[in-house]
Length: 82
Image (cartoon, rainbow, N blue to C red; front, side):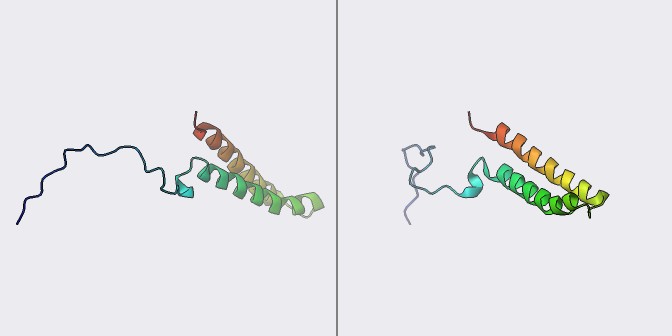
């Protein structure tokens, strides 16, 4: 049986240019999802709050949506490649 001899050529550390980039590998993916989910949460709470039918819990949930969107914006700004 022949012996396996390691190659004398160093392995390339550069990524393959032809390989597609997964959306999950992008720097903007997770913060953008947080922003969108926060906006959706606030939009669902806006109707009861505007009509006067809402109570304190609607304000709490809308505040959580705003906080989620704000944290997504902060993470997006921090993750922006320089």
